[in-house]
Image 1 (cartoon, rainbow, N blue to C red):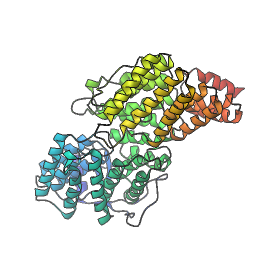
Image 2: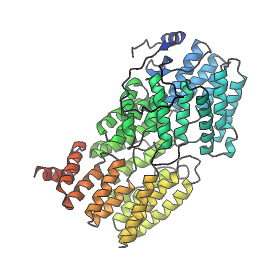
Image 3: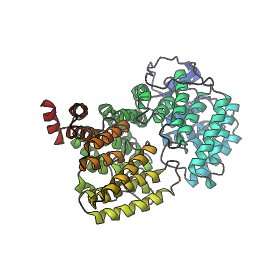
Length: 556
């Protein structure tokens, strides 16, 4: 796309004449299925610029509140699609300040509270504010039929919100946006919001029906506007699972290049790179995302976007066996009271140090893991530290301490059931609890029970795909099951479980190593060479001692 002037005047001038964009971006790897009711032809769209003049993509949002207000409306909508919600709220508020009669501005401000994919819920206080904003939108002088339709759709979230769960709110919102889309399939923004709410209200299913349906809707958007921020962003979320990730590689390759000044856009590319095991690319984009986020505090505190990028960055370094770099990332993590209070903040602060111990199988470090976050607010995230401490104790032969942590995991699982989120965090804690229980059983010599429990944890994990807040489990249950089979010298079975882990965690260091070791000890030389060869392609670090013997084995 041709670069435009970065001044406010240039941005306003762009709104006067709507620019038409033709297809042509490289979207290879995206889903191509579509249905007859979807818009697939190029449509009129407008370039959107951030306040600093950087590109925020192209939109087809209907605006009619005057040049200055319209600039803020478009900027707010693009920022919303890029999931920089607090900045989006500020832009929509600026739009209504410039034109108090602008209905879509009040609608956008109310929309900015609703984050369908994120692990947070609209507070009771913000529910009240959101309803008030929608009342202002309905009373505003500058409205249109489309604006009224958008207001009605968003009202589906806020109506009787106090008496409904977050999932129920999102399901109503999904149904309202589906109605808007079906009534006018050419409405790009309604289609994007319909796809987003499909993902937000999706139920766990290893066949990913809701994600596939959303992906088809988003493919129609990208066919019409290849640089649409929601089209790119939500496509990555739709396919943020290893079995589907190849479909979004094309989008991942252009999203961060198109919207290169937005921390979350830069980071989002790494969701797909993580799911296909492209560690150098994940490292590059997360490093850039973290640097941008660090320079842009939220409410005067270190941005949650910074912590979120650091978690993905540390994970990628650990998959390379680059422990020194991962330790340096851990050193960047601020104290929890210095960072913006958000679920992504707490998840990263809990997960990064635990990853560093568990990925290296340093059980003494894991056993010493201490509480870092507020368990009353984030019980499922506090469980990460509890799980690490329990696994460390179990592997060090301290089953009494491991049982203490096991009981604590049961408490945190029960607390997680009470959290008002659509995602089943209690299931994730139960997976950890079962994994720890299996190693306690193993330590007492009850091998049959240990293997049965470990297998049940692995199967539960398969049935409950990860949340996008995490690049991957701190220790996949199926990999832990494989570790147990390996310890029992059941090498063929261990190799099969490590290989199954790699199906959902491609290029994962520990599973590649385990699969290679298992195949070698089972006498399968060809398979061992294959896994070891893949490991050496991934492992660019030199800190792990096992790499020396892998290289020696391949050389001989």
